[in-house]
Amino acid sequence: MQISKSLLRISIKSLVESMDLPTMVHIAKDLMPGYNLHERMGIRESMAIPNLDASRRIIDDLIRDDRFLDFVSYLIRYEEEGIMGRRISVAYLREILKEVYSQGYLFDKDQRMFVEDPRIRKTRNWGVLRPGNEYTICFLRIDIAGNTELVKSNSTDTVHRSYGFLRETVHASVERRNGRVWMWEGDGGVAAFFFGNRNQAAALAAMEILHELFLYNKTGCPLSTPLSVRIGVHSGLCEYTEDNAALIKSETLQQLVNLEKSHTLPMHCTISIVVREMLDHLVSSQFLPVRSNNLIHYTYSLELEE
Image 1 (tube, one colour):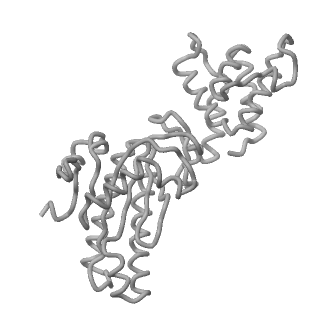
Image 2 (tube, one colour; image 1 turned 180 degrees about the vertical axis):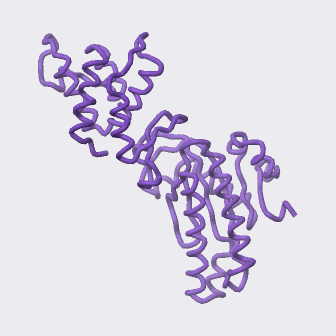
Image 3 (cartoon, one colour; image 1 turned 120 degrees about the vertical axis):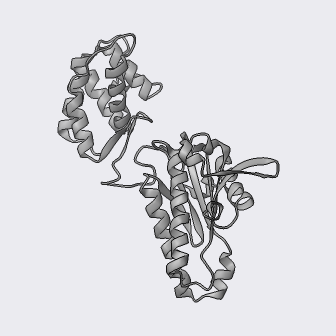
């Protein structure tokens, strides 16, 4: 995030006018573990530091460590709940928020953090996930059933057009619910959901993909046989990384792969019990329980409704 001179100025003033030095340092240590203000400023521990100098240094360090948005989230919590047994009005908070919003960020009340405004920008990590940190993420994995046979039985152009339709459908269904497609190969990929009711968003995206594909097969699929997919949805802890090879080795992704490959029929979506427990009743009732290898999963398909 780019910090304008005006945002820098009001952030420094906000600290100076809202809190004493111990509170400033407390916030800095919460956001940057092991933080030592005297060490950062290159002065002896016995020397007093004026509040204005301390505020400037702390804000500079927060920006340098890419923790500024976390700092603004902290100010919101500080305003609402207090800190160190005190509740104090945060000076210039409204002005700070206005600047942050103008740069394309929204405050997610469920996660208590700022995220990208999807109307302005869409990046893989929503602008907030940090490599090496663990997060609870709901993943959707989609795979084309009978890919090898489809490629053999149809022209390259026909396959590209049909697979392109699927890719566009997946991106639209996922991004409409503020998800992100993290991996895509020719015959499928993996999408991630992190904000809001991530499990419901993933389940609804999967259902929409099946509906769109059903209509496509009925009205415009040029392939010799219908385009069919398997979809798995699972949620769990995952260490964020931009290295897909490392990501796929995580326990949560391995469970997802197994769910899709071993427990899902073509043109079905199978969700884990972890995901089902977080769905609204209206949505969860659309998924029927199935037992496979002594495990219970829940599955949805258009055929089950007929």
